[in-house]
Length: 379
Image (cartoon, rainbow, N blue to C red):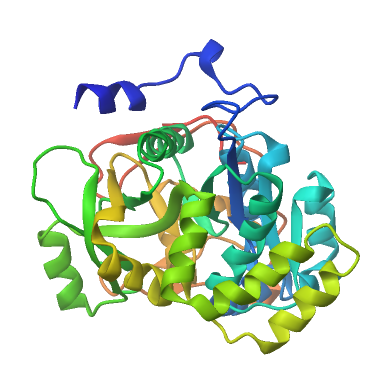
């Protein structure tokens, strides 16, 4: 317990990672993967209303001046040097000028292009092959690019704690789970084995994907956590587990690994992707992992962090309502929100307005209207 509180205490400035070396040692460099290969289909109508185009949601700046992808990269850089954060996206995304502009700021060797979206399994394995080739002894932190996080510093302290746990036992995979503040039937849940009291980490008992409201209520009462898909592990350990659970897909990506950095890399990736079926990482890999190797998956309950997976319009509006930023939604007047029905009504396209000006400080009530959330900036 004492050791965990120390790891989560606010790091002093002089102890922040040096971009020229690993934060955990030279032999096991800390790397990152940002998953930006999705199409955001469920949020497309809302994005079209905002922008009158179909830019995938991770490249959209809903509020402020940063896109969701840029927020994610900025968050990851609190712990990991930019030249070791690999971003995976689809080749088709490059047809949008905004995407080219956003990735132009990144070290180009860290941009990994996949021919098409084959779900989160291949979307994670492709950049993992690049990491394995360049940093074979690395630890890797995995970040989805479509999450809203208010208290970023605190979340990254939990990621740092996960790094320390993996450093101690390189066979472990450590996932961050958010303590729910309400029923959410569209999220995935981590069910921990709470055989001991305290702040965790806990072994993972099982995963539950998108439960019915009554089941979600039951899960929360039993201590289940929202699955953030933010995960830390040893690169080699993750590849080995994929090989045990899905040897066929592992063999295919071994071919890609061998081709990385060679003239035939693009050709090999194209051939493999053409034959691949879509694979959901959480459902088809994580769930078999915990069944086959229950002692190797741990979860850390994350407390005091306002987190949301921005997969639907209602979640975007709910976060803006809770943080007092309904008026900052780029391109639209404030939508109306009915707290009794949960229905959100956005303005028609002919009411589009200019984005609101930058605002450095926010202070807003939480959903209960009790405590206050304060952050420097949401840009």
